[in-house]
Length: 505
Ligand code: BG6
Picture 1: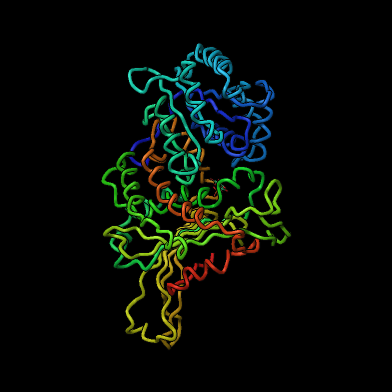
Picture 2 (picture 1 turned 90 degrees about the vertical axis):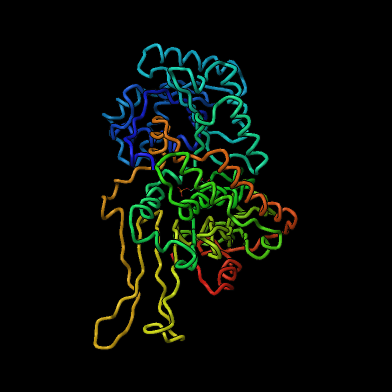
């Protein structure tokens, strides 16, 4: 991964945040920048321009950012450091479809760049809904704000957030619109899961150790489970979520990226194109769903009223601004296969949901049982299989379940855990937030942890098969699960009919 072979060198630049006063900026981007500053990672020449609809001036933007940092920063707010950092923050009120806004942005950039420290480099961060991406890219071009990929001394890069569209067709359209203005090498498509330390560690675990890879195939692995469980409901994002649903919001991107990291072939070099091509191969090997498969192997459901951390919470359809007859899924569980030599016949069970019993993202690799001889002859009491659990969050770590002999004269076997915990080994707040790492990578021009166009489109192609089957059979109501539980009984049946169980997290 980036940073393993070469040191990251973030280049001086101005970061222009479209949607700079929005939720993502407040919760993630501004705190991430502040933490990078605290850690001394930002380049010497670094400026930010918030570019968004809210009416604000620089002073107001600085106090908006200060509040955001006080509330959401990983490291505690420090007034002295803040005073130094906030000088880099500027704001330009914008209407994304108005050329005048881009002229105003140009003037701000001219002013900043005349001082010389940013070297004229620009990063445009589009923290805005996907429907605005094409429009903003076009306006940037028309205002002459984008440097060409080749032949210019300065660089221009663009970061776009997920979801990139809502199906293959819309994703292609956005990608085409981006391609009219930016070269693929200038485009950074974020999936923030790839910025998580624990996700990057999957490749190190697999290819930096000699003991896992020889077992990493259909001969030794019984199945893989990937769970992204959230405690939160839809919160303030009901409008977006109602259109997206769990399949588009989490499976199309975060879960498939995790699956790629687990299933990909060993890259021969830590090169962004090699790694991304290997991930693409996994996506291309995902078994396409027929409508009958979707019926049998994909479960969707919606949370009903229940409890979250001991307090009563409403069901999805009772959340503010939602339709009482909504059929948007807040939970998906499915079974799929990666149809290649390594993974032939190994089921991958994927599940995600909002308002589940707890927040837990985990990849579980369950190995095959030992033969039915010696310690495992008793069919009524079989040995527990070895399980490698990669805890992405929270309580980040990796554990391996093995069988051990209980002390005493008789041979009695008990499953025990070997456990690595990031917090214990590396310190509690040593793990940077995903956005810190990703922003730094864009400044350094390293696209390894970003999705290439073909990856995004391959993921949509596979997801569309499910979406299309669902559209053909639109139910009046979805199965339900009470908030604060582990999903509907249909999801248990999905895996139990294969003689397996969801792991208790
Ligand atoms: C986002 C989804 O991409 O990821 C949200 O849109 C989800 O719905 C979030 O809550 C989860 O991210 P994390 O890092 O908290 O697991």
